[in-house]
Length: 111
Length: 113
Image (cartoon, rainbow over all chains, first blue to last red; front, top):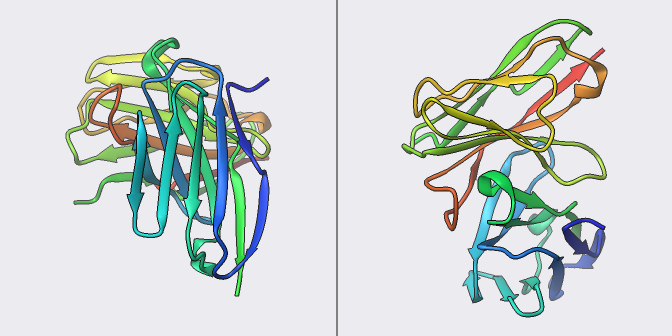
């Protein structure tokens, strides 16, 4: 079982829909990151959080430390939101405080 | 402010060839790392550095070398390329090791034939 599990693997939505991507992890963490990767492009950090909730524009990230679960929400989705969204956790239990990544969620938003 | 700069963006190598992937950051970050991204798998750590002169192995270090002679640069060397090293490589940096934002380069798509 992977230390970081994301669901769903693939998600197709219509423009304007509310989207939720989930991330569950099995290790103790110091922080959780949500990243965005566009086709052929690099990786951009969206959020880093260790508790509670953060909001940036139409994106909202929440984390429940007790349940070891985080969600990324996109309100009023738009075709430009189409990308791979990656959850990563930074754990003090592993050497080098490395980031451990989920496999990513491919989001496609159709007009 | 360029952030994290990776070169080249694309590279094709023949089996047995060597090459260096370059990574530079201009944010005075202490922590730098190299990851590879393969289909169906999350990014995996190859090597990392917590400061100039200090490097250590990650999850998948075999076949790769790194050095950190300056804070800014963290090159990744493939000593003798193998088809199993066909992947997309990302360099990342952060100010510290723990609760700090990670910045990624644009990636290098490497094909070994």
